[in-house]
Image 1: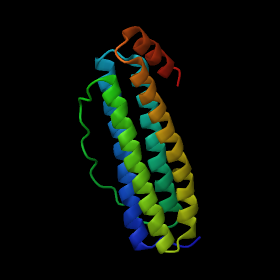
Image 2 (image 1 turned 90 degrees about the vertical axis):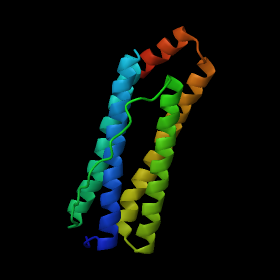
Image 3 (image 1 turned 120 degrees about the vertical axis):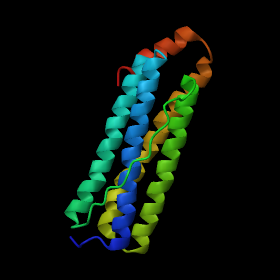
Image 4 (image 1 turned 30 degrees about the vertical axis):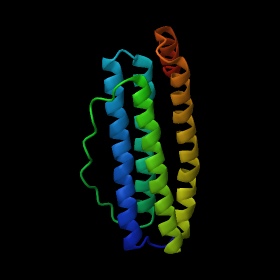
Length: 163
C-alpha cells in the first residue's frame, strides 16, 4: 500500500481529533444525564462515547498502516450543561450531522488526491454516519412525541439502558 501524502495526513489527523472530541462530548453528555437522573441515557451516551473512540482508532490505524505521521493535537473542552433530554438529543443529532459533513469533505479530498485506500476506508465511515444520524433522529423524534410525560421519559430511559 502506498504512503499517504502529507495533505491527507493533516486532514486525517484533524478527523482523528474530531472523533476523539466526539467521544469526549458524549462522555460529558453522559455525566450530565447522570446528574439529571437519566441513568439509561447516560449508559447509551457512554456506549456512544466508546464507539466514537473506536472510530478515531480506526483512522489512527489507517494512518499507521499507510506509514503516515500521527500528530495529535489538543482536544476541545466540551460543555458540561446540555438542558433537557430533548436538547441533549438535538445536540447529538446536530453533532452527528457535523461529523457527516466532515467525513464527506475528507472523502472529497481523498478523491481529489486519488487516494483509493483512504476512499475505501472512508466509505465505511459514510455508511456509519447514515446509521448514526438515523439513530439520533429516531430518539429525538420519540422524545418529541413523548413531550413532558415523565413516565414515558422514564420508559425511554430504561430502553436506552439496554444498549
